[in-house]
Length: 278
Image 1 (tube, rainbow, N blue to C red):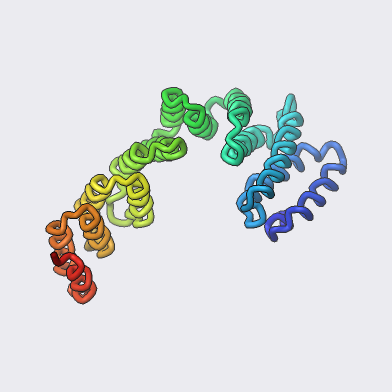
Image 2 (tube, helix red, strand yellow):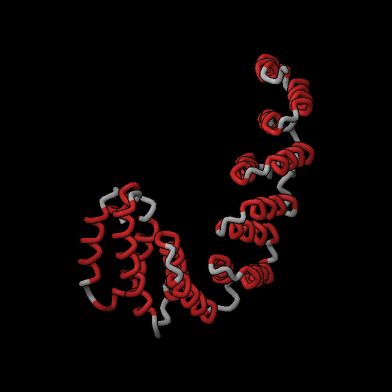
């Protein structure tokens, strides 16, 4: 774990091989933790070029297959966690090389996890994500609905659903669904508001080129946020969107509203307003 964390994967694999060569009764646990380390090691800088990523994907596939074999018929403490890790690893492998066979492997691992504990919600959420990646959106929604039946967390339902739309490139639908998760969760209540979530959804609209939807979203946030005055950057961002859309009138009006609330920003506002002159 330390070697992977220090971006020394070759040394990490060497230590892992020595560990796996140890007592047989420890191999199941060692395989699990090795797979866990590999799953997170993909994000290391040393794996950011394609050749290294291809080599790494081979190694993680081998380790994952070994762990899956060892889990068969061994109801141990790490059994359920092992299948969940395998599902994540196989899904991660799909994102590396786009081989749909990895999604079938993930489906198999999740099926085993669900059979072990049908009341545990995480496998259903992961299964929902995997079904979307397979192009089986209706089944994915059913899986997310099953997770919702278990925890009654409507915010999580829409968050996972929204992320799944993003996974398959349906950006506008993903943004709309994530936006709905804010509405149903008390997000706009004082103490719950998080600007980073707002920027995240706005960025999705921008990538999709949906500036009208982006403007409507900013208007919604400004209207519903509770407590203190809306953050000035919300007005500044909305003004910029209107400028991009060619609606100089609304860009001016929005900037003027910001100045009314934040007079100390008048000079910055005037700089922006000067760019709107015909």
